[in-house]
Length: 131
Image 1 (cartoon, rainbow, N blue to C red):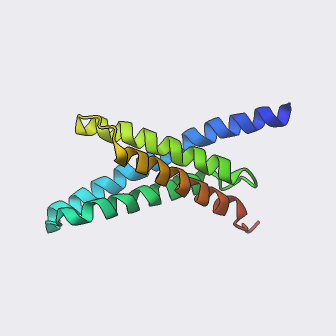
Image 2 (cartoon, rainbow, N blue to C red):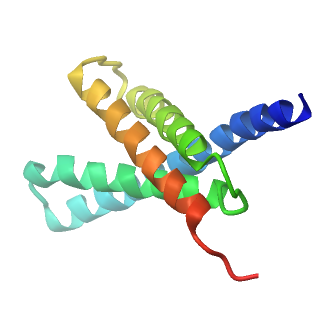
């Protein structure tokens, strides 16, 4: 019973922590990319790929920072962080944009975020750390 309670607490707080870290990283990444676009006049064809890279790196940061002391449950925690981050980022950037558009792109982002989070979670808990 105690172990289940600890797992639930770790899952909730870990997911929240990782999602917030990833969202903050996305905000910084998007602001930096907007600055680059403004400075160099980059065309629209690069927006989607760079946006996906920013999302992937943000999830990676959120998962790795959150799971640095974990030794198990990387798949579950990573998946939860990726899913929660995707939904939080959708709400955040939709609010900043002034419109909420639920479409196929959101489904793709949820799948990408969940899979990316799960993979990063598996890697994060299996990395050997120096003591």
